[in-house]
Image (cartoon, rainbow, N blue to C red; front, side, top):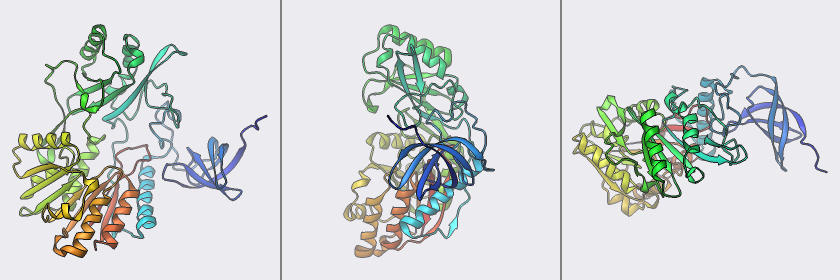
Amino acid sequence: MRKPPRELIVQIDSLDAKGQGVGREEGKMVFAEDALPGEVVRARSLRNKTNYRMVRTLEVLKSSTLRTRPRCPHYGVCGGCALQHMEASAQVAHKQRMLEEAFESAAGMRPEQMLAPIHGPDWGYRHRARLSVRYVAKKGEVLVGFHERKSSYIADIRSCEVLPPQVSALLLPLRALIASMDGMERLPQIEVAVGADLTALVLRHLEPLSDADQQALRQFAQTHGVQWWLQPAGPDSIHLLDADDTRELAYKLPEFGLNMVFRPTDFTQVNPAINRVMVRRAVNLLDPKPHERILDLFCGLGNFTLPLARQSVQVLGLEGSETLVQRARDGAAAHGLTNASFEARDLFEMTPESLMALGRFDAWLIDPAREGALAVVEALAEVVTKLDPSFRPRRIVYVSCNPATLARDAAVLHHKAGFQLKAAGVINMFAHTNHVESIAVFE
C-alpha cells in the first residue's frame, strides 16, 4: 500500500525565483508554496528527491510581518498569481534581490547604482490576457479562465482581481455565451486586449462558426460593448467578426504625444500605466541628443522607437516580425515622424558583418524577449575588439523580462566588449507574480 504523504515542520529562510519559500530539513532543501521568509509552516510532502523536497503549505505556525490576506477568492487554486500572500512592496524588494543575485551569480557584477523600482498599480492592471475555454462534461458547464496551479485543468474562477474590472465582469457572461453556442466544444481560447477606449476579444475556433453562433457573438458585443475578432488558425489568421467595425485598439504615451494603434494579437505590454513610466525612464536614461542616431533592437511596434524619434535626428528600429515592422511604420507615418525607420531582421542570427552593415549609432536600446540578445551582444563584442573600436555606442539601455538572460548578456558586454554596468532596477510589470522585468544601463 502507498504510504500517506509525510507532514513536516519547516523554517523558511528565503524565497526562490519562483516565489517559493526555501528552508532545510534533514539536510535537504525544501521548497514550499505560499510560505515567506521568517515563517514556520506545517507542510505536506509532494515530491521527495535526493537533494530537495517539494511541499505544500498546510498551516502557517509562525507568520511573517510581510504576509497579507490575498485579495482574490480564487488565490491558491488559480495559477495566474503566485505572490498575493505577500505585501506588495515586499514583492518588489524580492524582485530587486532576484535581479541583484542574477548579476552576481551569472556575471560576477554589481550595478554601480540600483535604480528606484517602477511599480503600481497592483490591481486591475492586466490589459492583456489569454483565457482558456473548456466544456467540462462532468460538471455540465463551461469554464473560462486561467489554468490551475501546475495543472492543465482550468480554474473555476468567477472573477479576477488583476484583470480590469470591466473584463473581470465578463468572465461569467462569457461562460454563458460559450455554453449557448453550437461549437462550444471546439472553442479553446479567448484572448483579451484592452486599449484606451476599447476592449477586444479574440475567439479561437477549430471549426467554422455557424450563423447562429456568429449572431450570438454580435449580441454579446452589443450588450457588453466589446469588439470580436475570430482566429480560425494561427495569429496571422485573425480578422474582425464584422469587417465594417472601424474602432481601433490603441494605448497612449501622452508625454510624447503618441497614440499607439495595435491589433489584439500584437505584442504590447500588459500594464499600460507601468509602460508609460518605463518608456519615460528608458528615454531619460538613454539621454538621446538632437544630433544623435539611435538604434532600437527588438523594437516591436515602436514602443520606444517613436518616443526616441521625438528627441534625436534618426532612429532605426529592428524587429523580427514583418507584421510588427509594418505596424511600426504605420505608426511613424501617422505621427509624421519621418526620422524613424524600421527593418525586419532576425536578431537571433546577428553577425559582426550584419551589425557593421547597419552603420554606427550613438546609443542603443535593447528590449528582447525572454531569450535575451546574446547574438547581438556577441556580435558587438567581436566588432569593437577585433574590427572597429569606434563602433562602440556611448550608452546601451537594456530592458529585460528575464534576469537570467540579462545577466548573461551583461557578462558579454562587460567582459568582452568593455562596458560598465552603471545602473539597474526592477519594473513590477506583473504584480503578484514571480515575473521580473528590469532595466539596465551600460556605458
